[in-house]
Image 1 (tube, rainbow, N blue to C red):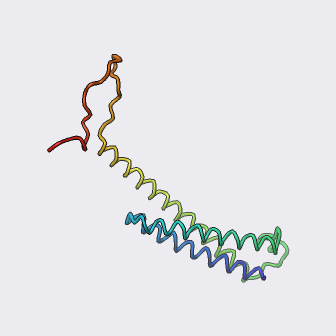
Image 2: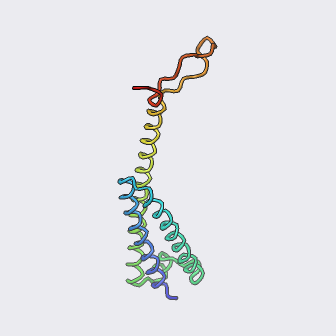
Image 3: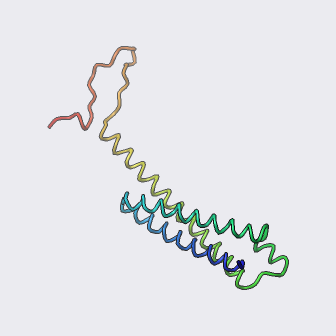
Length: 145
């Protein structure tokens, strides 16, 4: 298989992965858990495809990369453009993945805060004098109306 064709496959998978990450971002914002689960599986598939294409490239062209082609004077415009497109896609994917991780962390902090509000403040079993704290816990869920 020709190197340009392998790079084209890689670009196609990276574009699909980027679109998948865009959908993940939207699902995180909407807090759509079902869609997020589907997207996780889709991301795994794209990562597997990327791995397959990279292994195939390394198998057919061991140790060859665009820098070495350039040094040897064998870098065509088509290969150069493919390399630039791959770098752009990887950068966009990294940025979007970072955004999605931030959204996930914020969501987790929010959920943990809500849990602590619902549970109320946790009191220790013993007070400062080492005696059993008999005071009941005032929690949101224990309160009557």
